[in-house]
Length: 243
Length: 194
Image 1 (tube, each protein chain N blue to C red):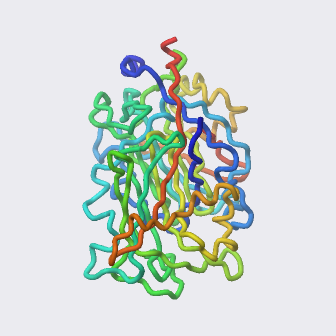
Image 2 (cartoon, rainbow over the protein chains, first blue to last red):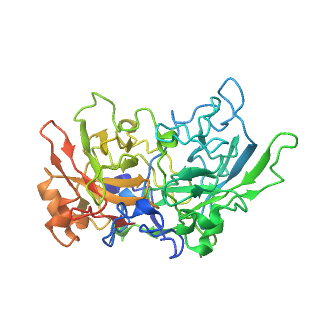
Image 3 (tube, each protein chain N blue to C red):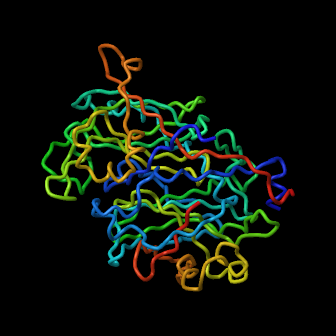
């Protein structure tokens, strides 16, 4: 019966694994919180079947008008450097991913999150909640207006500071493509001492760093950064049940 | 073949609730839906301590085994109008202070295994948390699907009953199912690469 439902579909996609050297190892001892949370047994290979090559269709009711502009929605504008962060959601074959949910969250310009467990002595901003959502357009593009987040201290090691970053959550077309990452800013002098940034193999770190984009800058209004996000690519394979 | 390098994964960090909170995200089906139940448990670390800053995401077929997704390999996912009543199939539960998660859903139907047979009813699960540099993937099966579980190709490929037991939710005595997810330790859950 599932087969009949697929009668109009000639091929199932198969998502290629990312090459070694793309993602951080789960156990990265310099990032202390991995030590009790990283699974230690070797993962089991799960062949991609229907559950893995399908995924949620998200958007309705999750994205409200204005959710892509983090500088609006309060009485005044938030403090800090106003910026535009935009880019495309793609797969590794260069195919754009349209109409797909993008979620972001971040600290305010002082480096403080609006969260009960963030209580270091930097000011909260009554005009900034740090949450944004949007859907990519028909060409896979997204754009947020926000303020540049500040760096902040954390307790990983003595005098540890997180470089400024924005958290990104992406879904793609299928369960296999789910990705959560962090976007960093160019030339941050804090990169060298950050074990989360440095958990990623060196050759791939640059992919997490946005570029200043004068082309996207709005003169007399906001600087702009460009950050393209690339998810696993796929190949179409014949449905075995057809063979 | 591969033209662009994939973006590396990073942890959701401790403040994921700012960006990942959805009103009603844990409701795959609404209150009062026929045959609905809670599937719940705790997310635990290698010391047996609760993980209060994690998120459990579930993805599943509807009661008939159809997904709320029409396969469009080269485009975006689009809603599958043939599945039951616009069933979405996605749940998201942020863990609480005691590591507790819970998703309100229905049992999925059997799903084609691609070889002419069927997989037992299951949920695909992503686990994200502070301290996890990328998501980890597991599955949830149901203890009262004895025959289906015995024939399931994924469960059958695991080395032993101990490994299988880490994926099988037990009846909780209240009409729902319970399964703890252990990131480490002697009870470490079986995790998958896809």
